[in-house]
Image 1 (spheres, rainbow, N blue to C red):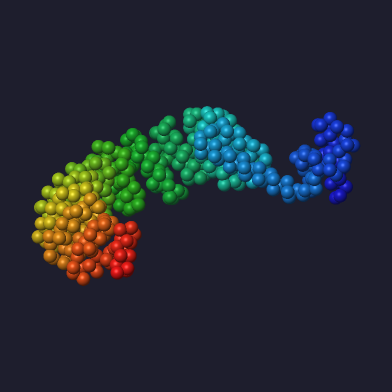
Image 2: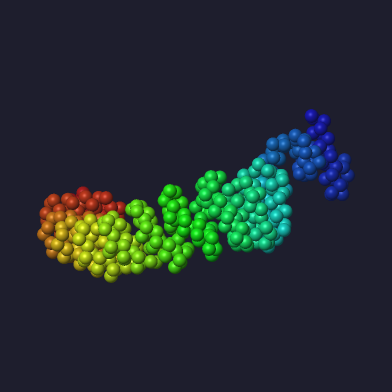
Length: 436
């Protein structure tokens, strides 16, 4: 072994001498040999265990790994900053080191080449990754990128050749752009087949983007099929999101024919997403089931239909549904009507609910709640106001109440809420009490 090491040192020194134009003999000393470039010796004697300076191969490997890490990090920084040419150069250098990150570097090199518009080069790079590292975790990502590139180049991608479900769906999605008549049957097969159960929702999503009558028919059937509740739920959502007027009509028919509460609730959510206020209002007025009326009212709240909600409150007879209407009022931001009910509602439970909802509307209701506390002697109202101020995070208003309150029991209730609040006003007041 020592003979090999000495030979490596001398050979390296000789090469170094040639580069410098010096006699080789002048570099045979230990001091001169230490100057000899490590990389030169490593390239000539890759299996040598010691470099010219006496450092082991392990040290060279460490330097190589450090260099690889630095280049890879620079490449990822360039990707983040969208400096595609710099990224391509850095990852190319990483790949040529043939280290631990070579497979990842080839993927990102291909990515950068694609961003630079060098699609043929990118495909070559991705092929190199699949050939040199077939078991790499980056291979599927490379296949997905290859599909995208080929679709950009208008090159057909074989759907059946894709064994992975996600890659198959990606290929079908591209086919959908170029040849919908071929894509739709494949999507339907994926929708109802057992091979890719986790991707049925995505397949349905791709169908929903299609203007094909066949695709629409598939979605409508799925939305009516209560034997597969998960798929039905997704189909109903997609009708609300993507299908426009045709979708709203389908939803209306499904709602009219539905026998179970859950399906009707899902349809009402889709009504809201599609902006179908008319059907929601009809459900809120006409549904016999209070649960469904409440759901319709809540969805109207999300849509901001304030006047409709107020009229529904006035006509509603169920206290529980009225509480839902109150919630819809604060969801829609209808502070005026919530304040009115907090002050004038005759039903005790509904009035407490209105005060509670005022608290949920934020600190802007603070002055109103303070005025109610001062004007009302009902302890339940006062406790509801305290709770409302706590919910709104209005520690300043609670401290104001605590300073004025003479009733020990009510003051204790206020301090209990302040103790739960993380605010400077609350902390300062609590310290003030402790220091008395």
